[in-house]
Length: 213
Image 1 (cartoon, one colour):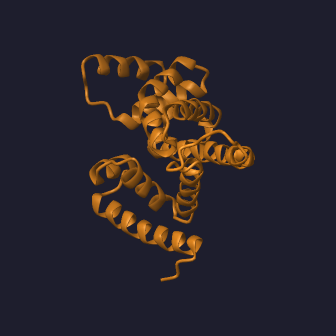
Image 2 (tube, helix red, strand yellow):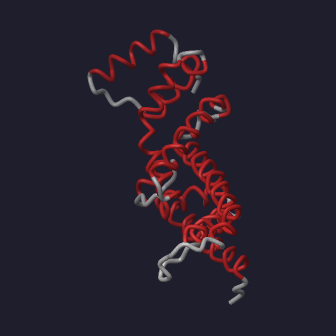
């Protein structure tokens, strides 16, 4: 499809009329139109993209980072990057997997930065002589970050399609049918990708932890 021609003035007018009358406009065509308008200098079009996906990105970042403040920072960075690299988006593919992959990359960087801060300040924490609850683990947050880092490394070993299927199904908690719709694949294909991805991830984690069983 020639999305440039699709998004001329007449098409945009028709699209708005169709939306007003609740016509069944293909979602990918709408997004492609918004992307083309954004690349043409229409910042309002990108604001529409943000409105559509900001909650989706935020909730996914929450699951990856575990905190709303960090997730908010991540979501802001994701849309800054999306605007910067929007010209690289393949309009023949859905935008959502592209945004989810970008969200994962941003969250990974935030997690690494947080882990470095823990390593920097852990000696200070260890020499603190103030009373503490001995039942609490002062390094629990660090251990959690290390587990997330291991997860991301294992995800990196997967082919792109398997990686996105596993992320959307196992991390984001979507149903198989929802994952198939986002990725534009059949449910059978998605189940196969998830199954292979899980096996590859287990093997990768076993290698990282020294478990060769």
